[in-house]
Amino acid sequence: MKLSRLLAPLNLPCPPEDPEITGLTCDSRQVEPGMLFAALPGARRDGQDFLPQALARGAAALLIHGEADAPAPTVAVPEPRKTLALLAREFYRRPDQALVTIAVTGTKGKTTVAHMLRAILTAAGHKTGMMGTLGAFSGERLLEETGNTTPEPVALHRLLRDMADGGCTHAVLEVSSQAMKLHRVEGIRFDAAVFLNLSPDHIGPGEHADLAEYRACKAALFRQCALAAGNADDPAWPAVAREIPAGVPAVTFGFGPQARSRGVKLEPDSARPLASRLWVADCREPWPVPLPGRFNAENALAAIALARALGVEDAHIRAGLAAASVPGRCQLVPMGGGVNALIDYAHNGQSVRALLRALRPHVGGRIIAVLGAGGDRPPMRRRDMALAAAQGADYAVFTEDNPRSERAEDICAQMAAALDGAIPHTIVPDRREAIRFALAMARPGDLVALLGKGHEAYIEAGGLRRPFSERAVLEEWRKEHK
Image (cartoon, rainbow, N blue to C red; front, side, top):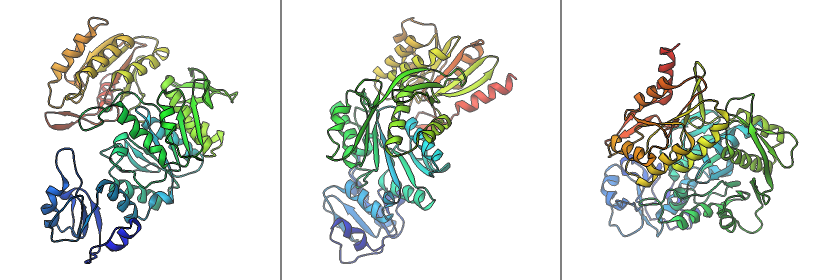
C-alpha cells in the first residue's frame, strides 16, 4: 500500500517520495524492508532513540512525534500512538467494520464475560472471534497468544482481519484501561460495550496515577460504542454512563432495584459441581451459570443483558451459558477419593475473598488454599491476600507466585505474618511441592484451591520465566494415586 493512500483518510500530508508500505511496527527489532516504523514515546525509552536501528533494518518510512533528520520519508504528528492505531486500521482495511465488535471492560471478570458472550453467540449460530488475556481466537482456533489483554494496534487489527477473513461475523474484545490510555483501540466504533466493575488496581508507576485516572480510562471506552451495558450495582457506573453519547441506548444489570436485568435469587446447582442457578426478575425459569458465586452471577447477568440487547434469543443465551467454560477460572479437577482441586486466577485480596466465599456453599469439607503473591508489587497486596485466605479457607499453604526479583521465601513469610495465626498454615516455597503437600493432606470432601496462576503456564523468577503447569502437576498426582 502506498504511503499516500495510508495517510489520506487521516488527512495527513505525504512526503514526496511516497514509498510502498509493506507493514507497520513500533518495535525496531521487528522492522523488515518496506515497513513503516512508528517511534512511540515509552515509559523508559523514546522510540526515536531507535531510528538508526529501524533504518538499518530497511524501514521505508518513519512516524515520529518530534524532529528527526533521517534519510527516509518521515511523518511527524503530535500523538503518534493515536496515529499508529488509525494507520493500522487503514492498513488492514478496517476489519472492525466487517465484524460485530463487542468490548468488555472492568477490573474483574473481563475474561469470564468474554467467554460467556462467545459461547452465547456461538450457540446462536455466529462464528465468533475473541481477543483477550488467554489469546486471540477465530472461532475455537487459537490464532496466537497475546502479550497484553488488549494487543498493540498493529497486532489488534491484524488479528481482527484474520477473524473476518476466517469467516467470523462477531468479535469479543477484552479492553483494558491501559489499552484506552495508550489509544490501542482508537478509531474503532464498537457495536456494543459492557462495563463490569471498578476497584482499586493497576495504580502505580507505569500504570495509572490514581483511581480517578483509572476510572476515566475505563469510561472513555463508552464514547466509542453504539450500545452500552453497565453494572448498576457498581458505584462507578454513573460516571461511566455520563460518557455515553446522546442517543446511544444503554441497558443495566445487577442485583439492585435500579437494574433492568435484575438478579433476584442465586443457589448452587445440585446437578453440576460448582455451578449455580440464577433467577432474573422477568423470567420464571432459572438461568444456568457454569461457575459459583455472586460475582460470577453478575458476570452472567452482564452477558444476558448485552446478548438480549443485541437481539439474541433467550434459548441461545441459555444454551451458551450452560456450555461456557473459562480455562484457569474456577477450573474443577476431580482428584479421586472424594477430593477435588480447583485452578483459579484470583491474585489479589478482593478476588481471593470473593472466590472463597463463592466456593464455601459447594464444599462439604475443608478448603485448603495454595497461594502466593507476586514479587515487585505493593506489599499491601500480599497482606490482603493472606487476610482473604484467613476469612475464607480452613488451611493455607503459602508458596511462590511470580516472585520476580524477590525471594519467594520472603514473600511467603510476610503473608504468614499477616495471617497472624487466624488459620493453620504451612510455607512450601516450591509451588509444585506445595500443591503435592496440599493434596497429601486432603481428606474426602476437601477442596484444594490453587490460587493466583490460573491460565498462566510459567513462573517468573530472577528475570526468567520457567515453564510451569498446575494442571500437569495435578495430572501427575492422579496417575501416581490411581
